[in-house]
Image (cartoon, rainbow, N blue to C red):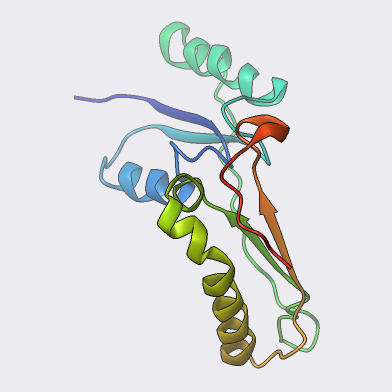
Length: 147
């Protein structure tokens, strides 16, 4: 059996973790496969990603032109062969916010996490940016104080 697979998703969609998508699709050998990601979005697609589905259907159902290969990406070091770590972005997860016990411990745990990451990475002044999604808007009740 052959099945053409087109995976479309927002990169921040917590119901479609990107790493799991690649691992899962690797278990389906010898299938036409493409990925279309909407960067920095949850639960919605950009027009470019929306356009991929009719093109995919045209290719496999009507014999239309082939959809381009999914481009490869890689992290390339600087000219000296080293990577430069300039900051650390952290997005607070949903489960930490809806459990009162986790919520009460969040500040202490985050402080320890930042301390340990700076130590392990050998970057004592590494800046951290911490984001929190307001799932319920400004009236959100599950927030841990961060200083």
